[in-house]
Length: 441
Image (cartoon, rainbow, N blue to C red; front, side, top):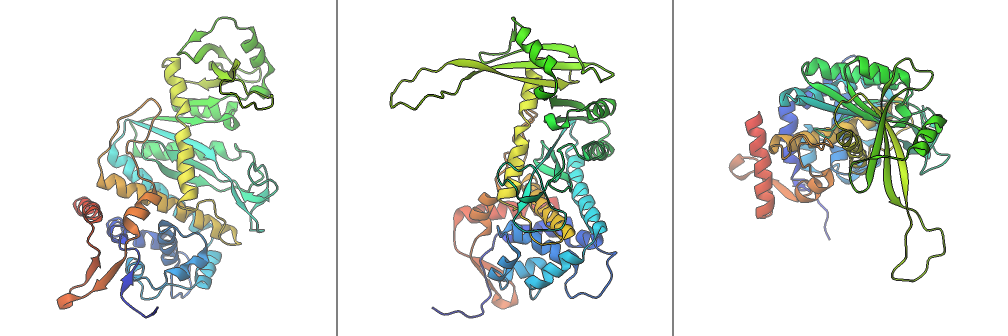
């Protein structure tokens, strides 16, 4: 074995991100987010954030993983650097950022997503809201011990996200410690996101789906008064009267073989206005609590599970239920954000540094979706579940198929060339992306 300096890269596919970053003027836009920070630095904060985005696109998680590609020629060319910053430099840059930097980066991400929505000119925009836990074993600034199903007793952040169903992108995030309720700060955050979307698409119909943690008169009334179509799950445990309504009902209207419903104009006693409440009954198999027997045919007893939804939509109950169930697509966005962009990782000890790391993960996810929207036409129309208009590939798939390709930078006759192995599938797809970016520019 021999290790020596060569003009090699393990990530030839980054050439499409280089073209994308140039088209979006990403480096300059990130520079504007940190222009208020003074002091002489060899590596500006915008360079560090751009490196974090590339770091996450490549699939690396911890900051110290930079050492495994610090000599990669394609990464250095993408960032416009001769040498990548050391891990300590990255940590200091994250620690020295401030809240204004975070707000500027949030605004940049919002404008990036809203610009795409404006270009699509959608008649209907579905913005979903939900929280997601970021756990850590360290005592990072701003973390707290709260409800955590997977890691009980761990300190965590509990950010609240807004996602766009049609593009599969994350519009914005509201940072919070881990010991707050899901609805903490939700009303102001929801109203801000709705206003941003309405400013971009004044004629679009805006709709949202939320879980039972957001069920309150203040949020429901705010959404209704803002002209937002909504569905919200209703918590049974807070209203004993709902249990009596369900148990006292003998005739249910059928939707399909498994699902039936009843609806009512109802309100809790403390509310001032009634809304449309849908009571759903779904036929399910009851869990067998007896010891497991090694029989081929085991009889099952069928029962029902119940759900209540409040909405201001005026369409048929079946369409309301289908729309509300479609909010599961947001869990898919969270899964990709955490699994492939490491949005669940608490990288440093400082609160602002961790917020910037999360925003970098969001940008990595959104940029990957933007790249695919530029290169491909929408494959779907608006569905009842509000499935994304594009059949997106996960970042991990793009990483395996395109990005992680060995190459060599050579200069025949003085012209810089990226040389890769002859593979027809890789060549076809890479050229397709590059051609699409050239047309878009």
